[in-house]
Length: 370
Image (cartoon, rainbow, N blue to C red; front, side, top):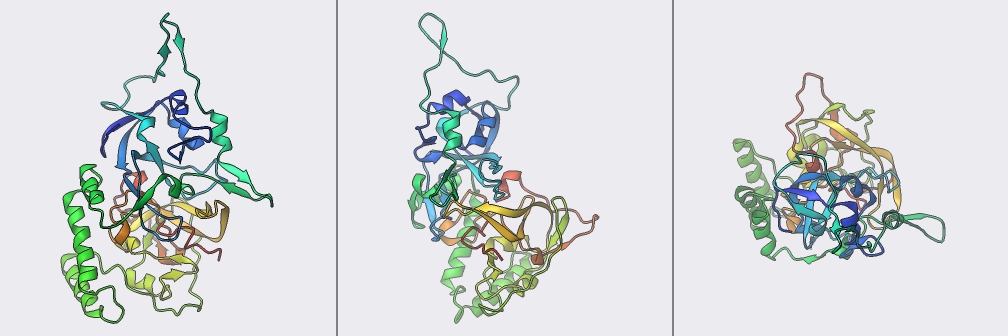
C-alpha cells in the first residue's frame, strides 16, 4: 500500500491481520499489539508516513529507517503493558491497511474468501489473538515482568539511517509529512547552528546572541539550546502544583525554566529538550500525569515518585533534533510541574494539533525515579 499524510485508510479485519503475523504476533519484527484489534474495520486518515523514526532504545538518539510504516491518529493505551502512560503513537504496516475514498458510510462487513462451490471459507491464520496478547510479557528468573511492545522492539524492525541520507528529506516532502517551508526552516536552523559555531560553549556566544536578537524582532522562537546554570550534582528545585488532567496551565518562560536546570539541562533526572522551547509561554490543558511507563531499554515497568506532566496537543516536532530532523513519531513531551504554572479559567488554551501530535524527548533514558 502507498498512502500519504491525509489519505484515508481502513484497518483490515482481525482475521486478515492475523494471517500476516508470525507465531509471535509480528510482521517484519514489528509487533501487532493487542489494543490495535479494536480498530479493525474502522477508517482513519493517515497522520504521518512512518518511513523513519527515532532511536529511543540504545541511547544514541539517531534516526532509524522503517519500511512500509504508517502512523494513524491512534496511540497506545497501555492496558496490555501494566498501565504504561507514555501514550506512544502506534506503528502500522501497510499490510494491515487498505486505501479507501473516505470515512465509512455504513456498518463494516468483514471480507470473506469463497470456495469454488461458493461457500465462504477462511484460510487459517498463522497467529491467534491469544498469541498476540501472550507475546506482550514474559517473566524472568526473578519473577520480574519484561514487556515487549513496539517501543521496546524498535531496533529489531528498523535499520540505521544516517543524517546525510538525502532520501529521508525527500520522503518528508513526498509523503506529505512536512511542507517545503517547514523543511527549509529546519535546514536553516541546522546551517546556522553548525555554521556559526552557535553550538560551542566557548565560541558560540555571539551567534546565539544574534540569533535571539533576530528572533525577538521577527517574533520567532529563541535559541533553543541554551544551558542551565545549576552545577551537576547540586540539587535542582522542585515545586508541586497537584495538577490533574483537565487543569489549565501556562508553560513558564524559557528563562524561568533554565533557572531550574543544571548545566546538562536536567531537573531531577528529566531532561528539558530543545523541542520543548516552542511551547514556552503558552497555555494548555493537562492531558496526563505520568506515574508509570515502560523503560524502552529493559522492558520493565517503572514508577515515578514525582509524576511528569503531558499537555494536550504538545508533541515533539523534531525541528531542532539534528540526526532526527523531521521524525514523524510525535513523542509526547514530558514536563516537570516547576516548569508550569496554573492558568486562570479565562485563559484560552493554545490552538492544538490533532491528538496524535501530542508526542518524550524525555524517555526512559532521561527519567530517574526522584
